[in-house]
Length: 279
Image: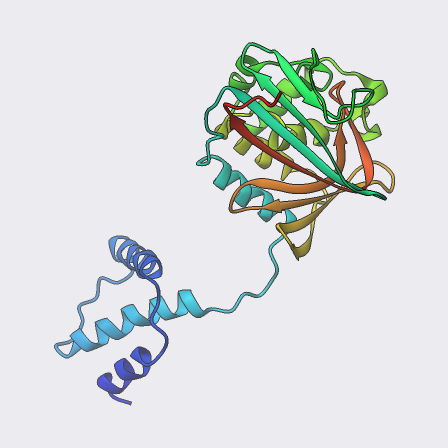
């Protein structure tokens, strides 16, 4: 096969994306800078050079995947996304929890202002559907934590774990793994319910990725279903969308005391900033 046949064969394959072209060009230029392609091409090399460039692109785009994405990689991809997805702005931090009960879906909501004032709907012992003022603060590992404290948390995964480990604990309301020194529950709290800054959320995802034994059960509605082992035979099931860095649902209930409990069913959590406070 001569040079033109080679080029024609390569060009007959599906056209790569602009992003793939850019990546391949970068790699090729890098190799040239490091002296891996310093030999001069012969006179008929313009066609050969085009073929070589196309070959690099085609190889990078159409190389088949050999293994599914691991649980750790899902969390690291979410960490990369979280760093560039700010929470937004508003007057109240609005959290909605929904879950399934025999009579149908049930929900709890809360609205928290930056000065610490809080309102809730359908909290335990409250009048159904009524929005009431609720003095309960944000908590992490049992410690009260406000907006300023959240914004001051470390953005390095290891330093973030150190800071969390030093917080006061309410052992009676925590999972056994957390009482034994684990940090899974508070890290999940940071990426699900609290108004955590983007870079701190990114660090929390990255820290969670270091949990031994995290597995990916595969794609489901809303993302990838991850299995996170705890002490004994307990495990957390959590659906993570790595592109939006959101936890769609999990079988973990975060308690008012800053701890956590496992649920028999999935609990969905959505968060947003809003300027509206229902009455």
